[in-house]
Length: 401
Image (cartoon, rainbow, N blue to C red; front, side, top):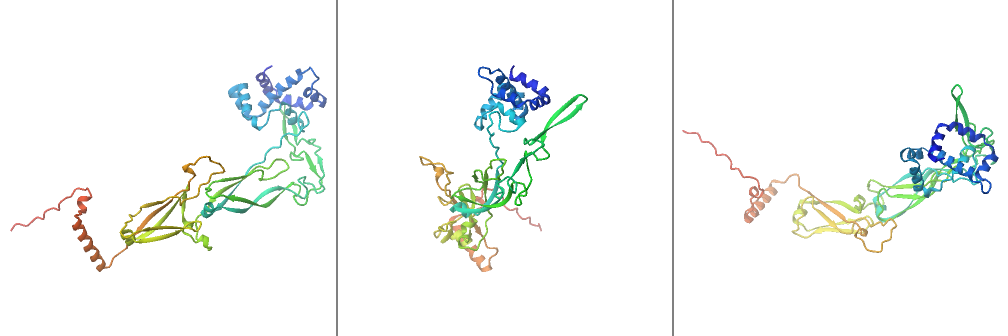
């Protein structure tokens, strides 16, 4: 009998097979799981049935089977081989609880991951630092060691016999019934009951605590970097803790009170490995030159800007200062050869020129006379040099006498 045929049979008689498996005696199940030497017929048949049942009861596998058939299911399982092998005898544990045909405990399921965000100033991304922060997460109660019981005594639920699930029969029509597996309402799916609840966790087995967590911010890390702390998420006796993921954010710049916060670099803007700054010049500085500026970088060192006398800076001009951007962050990878991407970023300085709102009449006359003098001497004609057509003014009409 092929797996495809068995699958079709199971889909038509799912509820009946569920009832049949539940009424099996323990000796019958053990005989099939561990047949006498030389008699593997029952074992092979059960493996086929369990394999088809696994496809039928798993939505992902059922979808693969509907599209690609039995070969598609096998390919899907091979692709998930890293997550553990498929054991057809785990079908027993789905119905009867416990640890499968050989009595070993099945693999603990993994709990959900936690994601928190930590906002840091640009200075910390540039220099690097050790940070500590509080994370509220679920932890196993130390008082009862995760049992939920004050005296740590736990008894098996008498309704579901420790399975955490019960079978309920529903009549669909006269003579036609459907059996549905549901969570036990007496033990809430735990399979166990507590007579004396723990006064600390109130029988929940877990408590909420604020836990201090430390992380290392390496120089050059960027906004959105994800720091993963394995098995540091919410704890529970029912699962292996997932990962705590810390996502780094960048704070908006603000002028602080400490000396390290009172720097020009506090207001640098970042894009990738490059930093950006806007420097303001007066008309005299932009036109005549002869000025200097000292920028205090994020780590306190000084970057010198300036022009000699007679060196003009155009409005919105951008100057590139190589190597004064963010340090390179390698993300833990080692390189045997030099790569240009391993170098630090650049600092880009954009110049803004401030023009006076108004001029005194004497100053206006002096500047106008000076510009006219040099314009005529050099032979500059702004109208012709603009490239636009020159239109002569219309002649004035004279009245005839």
